[in-house]
Image (cartoon, rainbow, N blue to C red; front, top):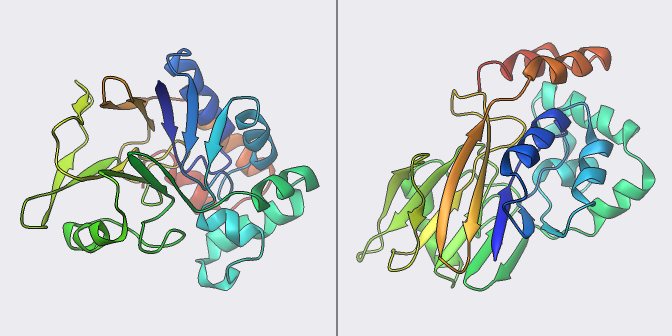
Length: 243
């Protein structure tokens, strides 16, 4: 089976549509690692588009915040403003959909968590030390995470230490025979690795390969809708720079 792996759409319909078009139906099923909403101008449209496809989705910290499951005041002022706006904008049927999503599931040989297996909703795996600690919190060979908006792989060596494997866009990563891995596909709707292109991945469970992908999308269209809804200026500008 070929899986389209996406994460952190963050209500950016233009980026999401561009990823789907770029993937060209080269997949059988979608795994979404959470944060469908927050930051962006299209929460209802992104949820409804995802629901048109066969998929599994997790819930992320912004999804939980919109549902009132997290303290909204633990978010920065810009994110908080977008969460309040999303709460006012979200349709009831889409809110109910978000209510049903888990933050972590196991689909052998993969564990899927929005943030980390140790803290599925809100922990950033940005450096080897955090990745190293998290290898003790899942039993499968591979763990897929989102949340950081950075495409990256952490590999565990024979001594339990974690090493960074940068995203390679030129060829798939062979999973067979690889060490245990924590893999992040990056963000569809708000990349933060100084590359504003939408990020996603293709996972082939028969060949056991992982393919990082990037695609440009018309950022100005998303920004125009954000301005129309008076979303925070910083959230609008950051899309151009990938931070």
